[in-house]
Image 1 (tube, rainbow over the protein chains, first blue to last red):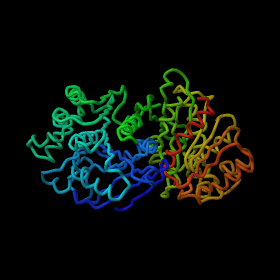
Image 2: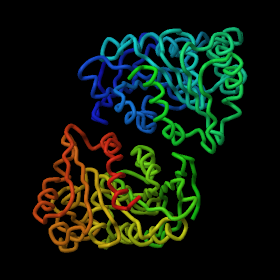
Image 3: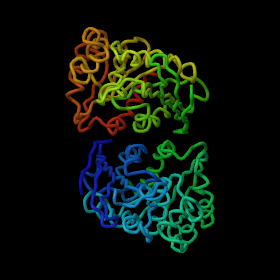
Image 4: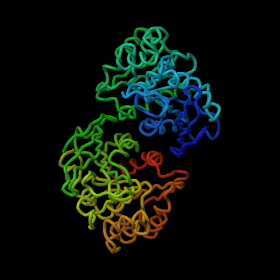
Length: 276
Length: 276
């Protein structure tokens, strides 16, 4: 584990670290905020998965989450959104390849060698984190924005018992029915749509649901509403009688101004579930 | 006045606008956060002047000020730090030319044609703002970071009665005695050091002081302490019996993690002075 930088922030430390990943075959970078309480013992952790084009850095500097995490004494992890590097496959489009891992394990060439973000985020990075930092494996929650909201929700529903709570900001809700999904799942997972279902929040909600509280915020002026398909997930949650809140926020768009506006409430929501 | 972007944020609007500046002879861009209260009438305003290399955008997305400004119903203005453009003089160094206006009116060639940031920030931009937006000219406060802290403090002391309060994050305190100052004042103002004194916070504090409250935060692990010279200003404030707080913050550096950590207290400080 290499230390890229550490900055004092809100009484704790905002660090950036990198490590050689077996899952992706590349060096992976992530951000980690540890509150002051981490000097004394294990702290709960909130995972934040980022959206298309983002690195580990965007939310770390723009989402304003550290203030609220410090107040309740929980850690924040900001993973990257894909493997990166000159030797890693890429695509000219912003929504495929580097910066657009979609939190799946690719099975199709040329992506299958490096694009194993599901394994990275759900297995390897947690293992490395719990080994290297004072984070309580028993007290995890997860959130994300856009593609990261898709990641947070699909992962939370796929590992029952691991996360006490899940939330999302403007998540991609139904990728198997959206151009933010069909294109990438086709490239990464191949043409057999049966393999896509495990990575569609709406389908997972219908089939499985989540055994804890859910909070979702979606701006009504989001420029990507047609791609995000909030109506699919909102309907599925109601249909399943899933406990949780799906909030349409009047006038907000897809930007970090939206995310930072509601971050306080998301962190408080998770803190409640984590007893932090 | 052109609208570059407007995003809903914390119940208000984070806008970015540009206009043709007579002071600089260029198109100038600035950020403006208006809280929800601006829909009903005039709101107080806090100016935020940025540091070296910054545009109008850095603080707008990284300082986390909107949350606190929204809570107390005050506007935030984020001016750029210099004129910009292919026809505008520049220097290869990060600390001279574009991104490094130092809030002075240059008198020396080639800078004198465009680098008139003192006039821009103290005359032209206020005039344009009060004309175009519901901002109360009678309720102004000012802050800034690094070079912007230098700007905030020198401007506040040069216009008695205009600002109810002034604060700064890691300001350049004594530029006439620092390589962050001597180099730029020599280039912009010429070799006669008598012309520099009007732009040195420590000298202004000794001569004039500020007729309102002052709050200054400085990190003890700031990598630029030798250039910032906090001891000069802290000493001058105490010597003058200037009302105000000069706080050395243990372990913090020069980054926006430092700025955002203490932003809540700075906005609350100004809100008190503005009766907001």
